[in-house]
Length: 103
Image (tube, rainbow, N blue to C red; front, side, top):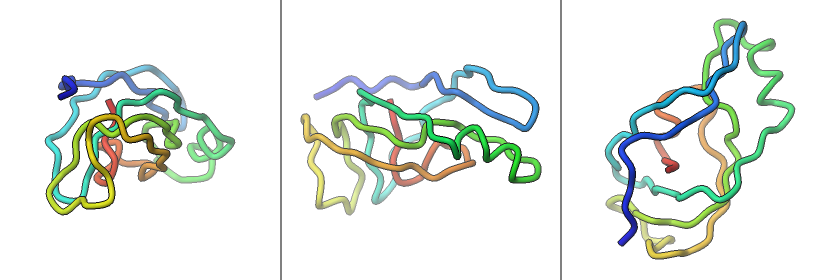
């Protein structure tokens, strides 16, 4: 069983600044998975969104690749223990995602 940290370091962006910030990892809910990130990717939308969306703030790098380490109630298509996965998390919200939590 993988040890899941209780916080993560993320790149947080607003219209006026981008900074690394530590966030708590919320408890796992139904239909959610925890991914141990191996690769995260920044795309043009990551640096453009703060300029396009009024009052935008959010965590960049929504494209993730890694390993499933824990699944919530109702998840049947993935199993913890090293299954590889690629995902896109929900943009512009905290927690980073209500469908995919990353650690």
